[in-house]
Length: 616
Image (cartoon, rainbow, N blue to C red; front, side):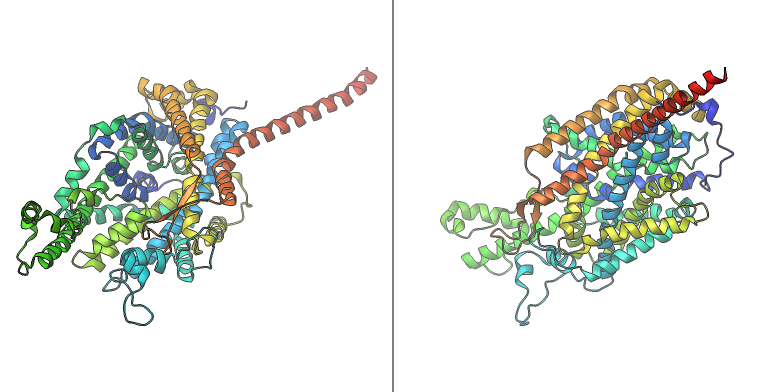
């Protein structure tokens, strides 16, 4: 196999025309912005809540040390050394491995298509936040103006605004519906903003990143200060950090910790390889990898504190309203004077009545009001951002201002992640020279953004939310784990561990220690292989399904669990395995090209030999 030349042959890269970062801070902020995304806000807190609070941090930081940081260091080092995008890096290492780069390019394209749709929803909520009262604060009146819309009354004003007024979602994925024009306009605006920010690559993203990467930390700090002063914040933080060590016996905890680290650092996308390729060749990539990875994890923890302080406030409000309903029932049933029972006295009064008149109390059908039950109501992803958190904001004084800050923060978080994602698409295209040199880079960037926009229009259909879930579940997860595994194997066993260590020593001035060599050669590949096997086992356990918002469902507003129809399951399979199949396809194509060249050379030799003998 053709391998990349070592340090002595690659030179210092000073003579190339590759763009460079204006300064080190631009590069670090770009990598932090790419790694720190929406998942840090709405996925990590959910995992902490689900898996025993502080106990989840144990497998999380173990996975960070033995999987996240080593793989991250490897990506930054190989991109910086070979100074190419993902396709160029793997083609340089070996033409037979070009499929890894092509697969990463494909997955990044698929993710860019649906990820910006989430920003479209965020932008829609951001625009609607400039109203007082907020449009999701109350149910709309029905057609006769004699009451409220039944669907909203049976669910909640926040859920109704999300599912009906924003998504206008259908009850079945087979029913595509029509385009939601307000979402299409927001989709155009989102892609226009992305294009303007990445129009000239790192020359423009390097400027925009100062705002998009730092603004979320300002907003998070504001929310932290406000959240810690809210009633119920202490209970929320106590719930977050109280460890339940027995939960660590569940293998799923370790699997989710490893996958969270993997996706939180944006490993396997090719974006970090592209970013590091614009570094000076002798930049200390090891220090960068450790710094960025720790900043990413600390941001997740910082966000969890903020989220749980606000969720504690929401739980305290819900708990209080639950008590008020029960108190009203007791007052009406036992003819107590109005306001004679306070929330603090409720437990004592109920205990007394249970002893003296248990049958009458049992007949009231009182709700079970325990604060822990409200704290246990977990949500992640869009459920946390567009339902749970928006409902909590409603109870804050000056709710529209907090909504503007919250959705503005989410938009800038997603935007900085889109910079890295699109860089993983555009940099390989530039390296491969898909367009003549005289064509401006702005044109190539525009074609890439326009193509992604056109492909994402179907997410604005009534069934768009269901399709976004399909892409989110199946386009990235399995593919990225496989690509990361192939990256480690390709660099360690094909490029060569000694050669790679020589490169790192040449760039940083120090040869990798035993920790790095062991994790690269043994630990990280085994962890990735374990994640792959576990993921396949989870997929095989039950047929793929989705949760539908169906007002006709008997248990509405609980979402109806539906199995994907056959044609959608085929789509899921294609998304899961098609990018990976590019790896053997490219290798086979290279093998055929090499065989054809050998055959052609052999035929030329056969034609030359008789002529040579005749001349003699």
